[in-house]
Image (cartoon, rainbow, N blue to C red):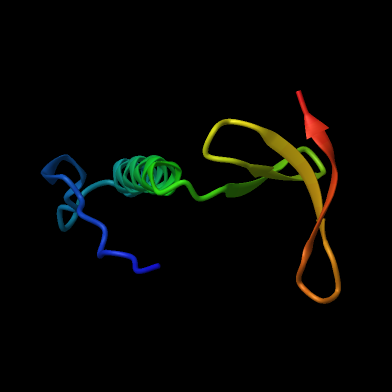
Length: 84
């Protein structure tokens, strides 16, 4: 799988000398936008996404099914159970 360089809209441009809080909000918004785009792309490709839900590691399939998983020492995933 290859990743393309993130494309940041002009709304997120950093202006020299701007307030650091404004810059931080722009950077956070750009990051959230990119994550949403990456998740949508992975789901469109039929790939699962992984994330933490509290203290649980979750694998969410492209069809929306969610499983709590553990990563084994050999790198394989062990399904603990489905999250409803």
